[in-house]
Length: 272
Length: 272
DNA sequence: AGAAAAATGTTCGTAAATGTTCGTATTTGT
DNA sequence: ACAAATACGAACATTTACGAACATTTTTCT
Image 1 (cartoon, rainbow over the protein chains, first blue to last red):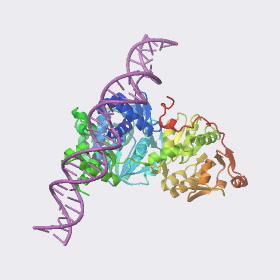
Image 2 (cartoon, rainbow over the protein chains, first blue to last red):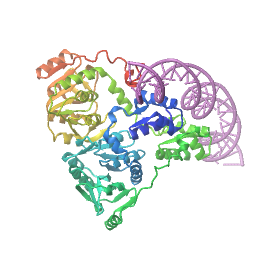
Image 3 (spheres, helix red, strand yellow):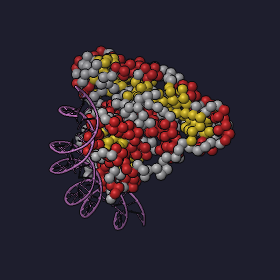
């Protein structure tokens, strides 16, 4: 096992699929080396080899959803990273449905002693590979479009728990501070989460302000921290200030930030 | 334990991975010193050694599970196919934890109008890609070793449902008709499933008779149908007859297609 | 301060990873 | 269906990393 291979696994888990060419670019090695890596990872069952690259073994795939997941990906990662900073070790964290919250689970990989609670099948799957954390899955009616579990059963199960942090997403945000969602079924679940979390973090990129959605989950006054990728409209900030809701604008870290860790990604080959 | 080593752990936890060269730079010591540190940390299980550096230890449990999954694979598929035959369209089916029940979900792909209920994360993931079926996931404490959800929360949630069919597996079977399991936590869940299913199908290949397990789930009298791959011992058959439990021996349909398990490790490349 | 123990540096033979080349297999475009 | 383009894996050469053994320095204990 090499560093490269373990990073390949990580990329594969994040992206769902990987290409030989892409990895050649990324690691600055020959295609043959990547092929060898992929063959070995495939032998170990970590990925499934396909022509031109590899994909995650079929148990973890999702098609249309993966495309939505890559939407605004870099903002999501920025926001997720910021959220992860606010989560200490050894505490209970609820992660709700949503692509942004899904990005958070990746950033929590190196935390220890967490109790991760989620009603998102994808998060549960990812979390189950974290060595140092416990996982509680909230059951319910499985929504195939995004792996979310919703409905009365979910709501009831959530109401039996209590957690230090809840990280929630939303479909849309209104300037007047309303948190909105597309699915009415999900609203009940979100409300339950807000009620049972000591510190509630809303993770939402700025594109949510351009969207509309029919169902009201609550208002920013109900959450403790809002993490976004840009400074929200003044009116929104005002409302947050009035309700003691902290607004945090995540740093852009994913843009071109890859060169510095080159010391890590290309251990010794750099001075060729 | 040196200061350096504890800082190495800290860096590893933060970065996820570390290089010998990077640490040499960081600490201004020789590579050999770093290697010694990493070897010792690896011996202590704090990191996992790789060429050029080290990474955080990955969950090793999934590897063991993947191997278990391929054990007796062809028998499992035979049994699964037989189980699927007994499930009509448009009904509610519970699928319990276990590699054999996992095989069943694959065989149910072409059913329609099913409500699939499961406390197995792998089954939930697979089922979510079935177009024609609804899925309810039973939540609970996620067992990373096999994706099973167990504990009081699971039990309680199951007791709120009722289903036409339940397909359960087990760790071991005793000639005297006892159904046994390794995990005591799982027993409560299995009992709840048996109680809430109208028709209970036990799927177990013959190797279960050679195993021992500590926790009693129930007896064959509690289930309606037992599906195996070979004719069980006479004593067992007698007991089944006495309790009106039907025993079905699955046809071998996958006979010669599978012999090389290598087909699994290098999917497409094998027939080169 | 002096001896013992631990940590670190140095050297070198061995093992592993990577690059290179080439013939074969798989896709892709027509 | 065929041909060109691309990807593939095997075999070998080269580079790099590794660990063992011993020398040297630093720390610890009395």
